[in-house]
View 1 (tube, rainbow, N blue to C red):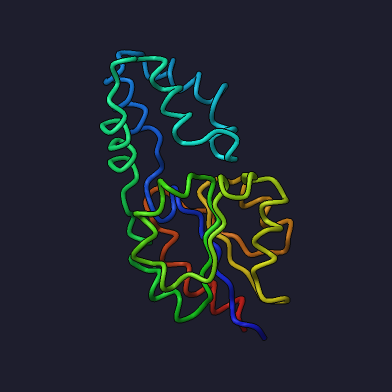
View 2: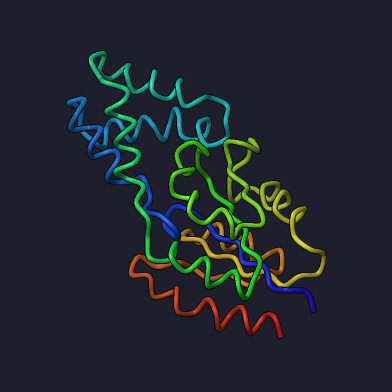
Length: 197
């Protein structure tokens, strides 16, 4: 049987999610209520940003429409403060001894590059939504990952959103929902060994 494939999300799995800290920091800086700016972002920007329809620069232009005095460099620093490594990031090297590692994330590659840099030697592939103009749970972004996997290999997919694990399960992948406490981490090796038998 082919070696197991481990497909990992980034936000909520290997690194903290941008929300809510990024929006709290930004709202405090621009003087808007957090729910107002985040609500507008979800309605007007989120889908287009994650699928590469708008660039990071256009995102910051949109943010500046709330506060013309906003310093973009400082605001960009909020991304780095909000995206911090989670304990699972340190496990990737160990997991790579048992499985081939792939990343599948709804994100901007420029924002996750600093997080991913230390684990690049262990990665077989990365599929980031803004680079492929698709986002989870759309079936086509999963198809992009499947193209990179050895045919017939067993797959374990880890994500922190049930809608994404549901889509992965429909492909016959084994799934693991990442909890905020990180209890899922201890289940990875046993599950990889189980699907690899």
